[in-house]
Length: 93
Picture 1 (cartoon, rainbow, N blue to C red):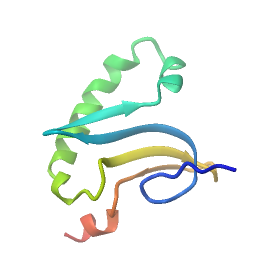
Picture 2: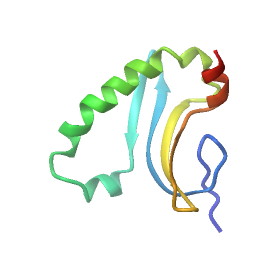
Picture 3: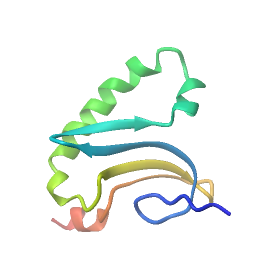
Picture 4: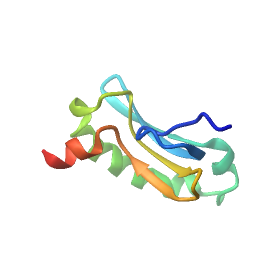
C-alpha cells in the first residue's frame, strides 16, 4: 500500500521534484535515482528552468501553507501532476 502523497493529497507512485522554502530562498529538490538515469548534462539543462521557477514561486511564498511550495509527481493513476498547496486560492487572488 502506497502512503506517499503530494501537496494536493493525491497518492503518488513516483516523486520527481519539489521546491522547498529554505530561509529566504527556495531549494529545488530532484529525485536523485531518476536524475541518474537522465542525460549526463541534465543538471546544466535543468538549472535555468529551476531558477526561473524559483523566481516565480518566490512571489507567492507568503501564501504557502507548508515548506513544500510546489511538487511534481507521477500519480498512482499514471498521470503526471504539478501542484502547490492551496492552488485554487492562489489562482483566485
